[in-house]
Image 1: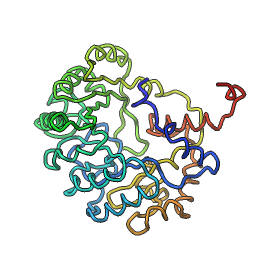
Image 2 (image 1 turned 30 degrees about the vertical axis):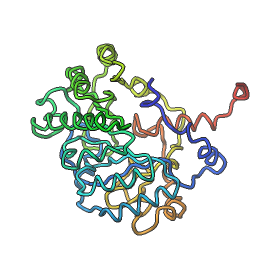
Image 3 (image 1 turned 180 degrees about the vertical axis):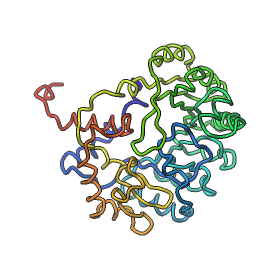
Image 4 (image 1 turned 90 degrees about the vertical axis):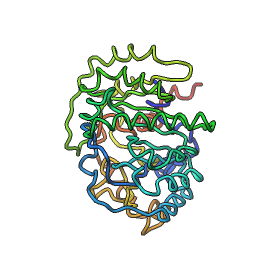
Length: 350
């Protein structure tokens, strides 16, 4: 397992975890996913949030986002990923908003890359990492999987190359990556895509499994019987400057029993959508029962400590986590927290 991809970061925030162990609550999240824009340039066959993409056209302006992000930082939030249900780089002030966030917290971007040139390559300058979602090794398969025109494939690859070039030219620390969600349709082209990513100057290429969102209209059942063979084919492509990361740990957790029945990790993360609405769990974004409030109407620290979030948290904890989304981002964190709560005699020994 590659800990940087298949693991979690809670172990690096011991004081926050200790506070939660003592009170079962937190004074603020450690990590927040932010959606700047509710629409997307693609209609991916594997999209888990197809029921939310383009469902409205509301968005915050740059000044509103600056205040929300400042409030997040003041509440103790340490990292932000700009992603969400749409393509955040479509926001006309994406670079300015991301730059402001980078002055307060560690920041990252997940993008399909199609709006990268228009947003401006300089947006990567203060990022910890940027990850390009490219899910095919050729234009025809890309068009089929991403639900867009074949020529968009080259646009996405050029975006990776532009980011890598800027990183080298300016000596930036940002990590540039390409990610593929493994599907039956793109399995045959995965090795080709890894080579394309390497030649474009990416720092890594990762392969992860499809995760079925319970509310998505897309219903896929990929055959992963060939996944181990693909991992072996990809391994020789790694060099001292380029890593292939096959997320074997996440693949292994598919269908495996979970050692917890309650989601424990949501007090450490939040999701803020393009309207500024805050959600208690990203899987249930769009369901009013899981809406904490709005971070423009109410300052984020007040939202986090208020009765609305307490009610949503209780609702999350009432759910049967064993039946929740497989390969959920919070699964490794939940496993860690569940183990901390499961005190054993041998824990006294170093």
